[in-house]
Image 1: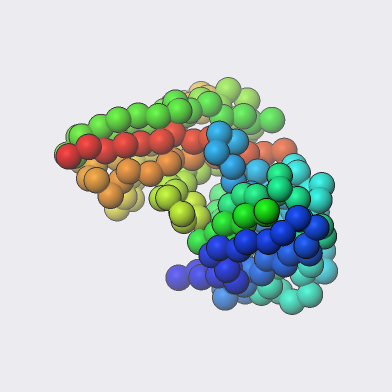
Image 2: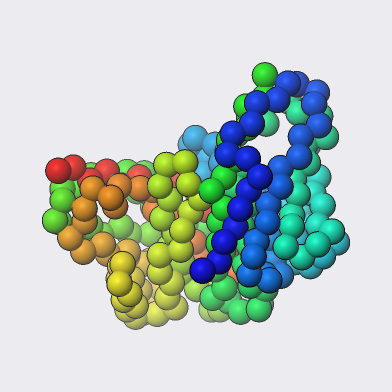
Amino acid sequence: DVKVTQSSRYLVKRTGEKVFLECVQDMDHENMFWYRQDPGLGLRLIYFSYDVKMKEKGDIPEGYSVSREKKERFSLILESASTNQTSMYLCASSLGSGAAQETQYFGPGTRLLVL
Amino acid sequence: LAKTTQPISMDSYEGQEVNITCSHNNIATNDYITWYQQFPSQGPRFIIQGYKTKVTNEVASLFIPADRKSSTLSLPRVSLSDTAVYYCLVGRLLNTDKLIFGTGTRLQVFP
């Protein structure tokens, strides 16, 4: 079974703080993704990575950056947290075969509250 | 852009069959249709995927008509534990135009 873990289930941070959200997958997947989920808006893609040190912007990258130094780890960074970044953050990974039927495996999520 | 449209919510009772339909009029030739399930405070979980006709696994069935402009997720004999949000996705990964989960369908199962 693919396992995707996220470093924290709950986080409380103050406005202006730098925040790191860590995600680790144990199945040697090439692709990793960061989403945020807000009520009424569904899941929105922030960034994804298809290889080590490679990254691509998703739909809402503003205010975020990412880092992928190792294949199994994908970090989401909030350079200066703001209250509108209060959300549930979900990490996902996928094999990276390029096949049209490829699916994603999600972590449990990190609920971030920015005060 | 293969946008999907699903009902916002559905109610059912234990033991009933539930069918959730997703519309995707702009589906491309190479697109697959994938359904995910999400419980509160958890990440989405893959349920089923198909390209055409019918697919069945231990959890659900997926019906896809010949024109592929819609699909129906069928959950046989639901239980309380099937209460969740169900998302329909169409497209392929790494094409960010198509990585749209939308708001899904919130299924509530009553005893």
